[in-house]
Amino acid sequence: MITNDLIVGIVCSRFNEQIIEKISKACTSKLKDLGVRAEAIIYETVPGALEIPIALQNIINNKGPDVLIAIGAVVRGDTYHFEVVSEQSASGIMRVQLDNTVPIINAVLTTNTAEQALERVVIKGEEAAEAAIEMAIKFPKR
Image (cartoon, rainbow, N blue to C red; front, side):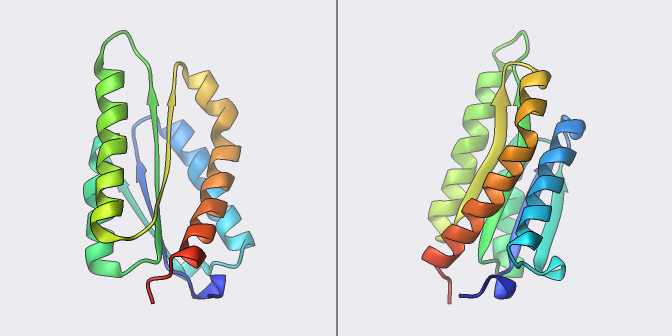
């Protein structure tokens, strides 16, 4: 499979927007560097990490992507909410992946502080793009 034939879906949460914007930019830039055509990148946004799985499912049902990337940032606060959101988001992403046999790269950062997240944004975005290409080639839908 040639990368310029790939259809890549990206779902980004809007919560922690400064972090998300940087991960997303690094990811899409790397995808293009790896040969994915800009018009073959499907980009959707949702309010937060818990809404990512349903958007991934929608792209699978309506757009037929070769691979998907989930982008988000969950930063620990003073309550148990961090654990719930982190765990349920990851669980939902995994469920969509396994139920549909479409690879999904989980690029939802879970960090203690926004500063920790910002230190990881570029590498996380680039690694997500590289992993997406690898998985799409290893597990082609066609």
